[in-house]
Length: 112
Image (cartoon, rainbow, N blue to C red; front, side):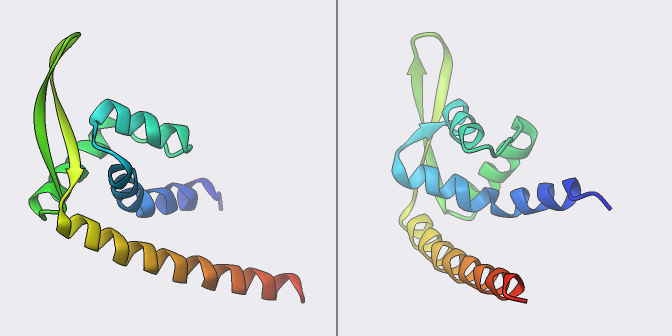
């Protein structure tokens, strides 16, 4: 069995959390969002990102505005809504709980 598939699933599972975390820091457009995720070693494609952004927007967790670009077509800039900020806070709490649980289990396995 290869770990590659499990690692891919783990990365997919935290992608929404990471996208919302980036948007909590600052308004951004898609290309910059992809660059932020890639810089954190979370490789993501347009085919993965756009449907996720659309789903988050339909859930009213983020919103966007159009801005003219000096070097091409207009850009869609995303920001979190108040609901998105609250949702991210819930995810952050859950993440802290999950990582603490995993660390506890890992520490227990090392002592055996």
